[in-house]
Image (cartoon, rainbow, N blue to C red; front, side, top):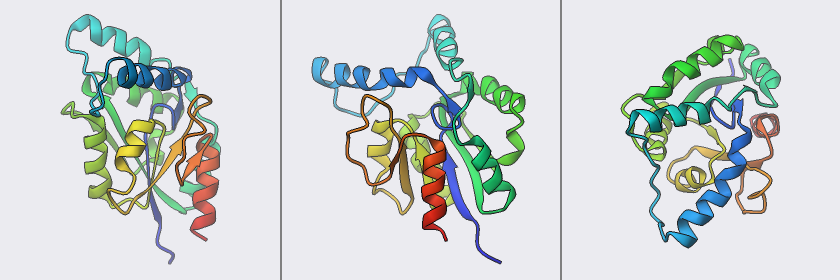
Length: 188
């Protein structure tokens, strides 16, 4: 029997399409060029009101990303073993599970890894990549992609957006479906 390819998936912007991810590039530019913050660190909303705003922002991940049908086929045909690894903070857990249930996707994933201890998302994801010894990980946040690339044997696929698409990266795709097709080609 052929060995399954282990693939990890970020949630927002990869499994769930999130139109607000296009704002990430200008915010990163502002943070680095204007504020001079170069250390990779993600903000954690501490107050109740900040968390409510964060929940509303993450509810913009409204519908499945292009490629969910192919993902379902690859999993059902036992081509891949799929793991969700999301850096979402713990107060967003219920929304993610409800979203997966709504679109009948929860059963497809061998594991759903939530950032329950509110770790920095890039560090949490790095730990999970090592724990599952993934062959591939699909991520849409360029800062996280840049951090993870080359730190482990896992190949990091980047789902780019319109603004930062010209940034060089060896494994980049415009959407989930394209990344899955590339992975399928490499695993034949």
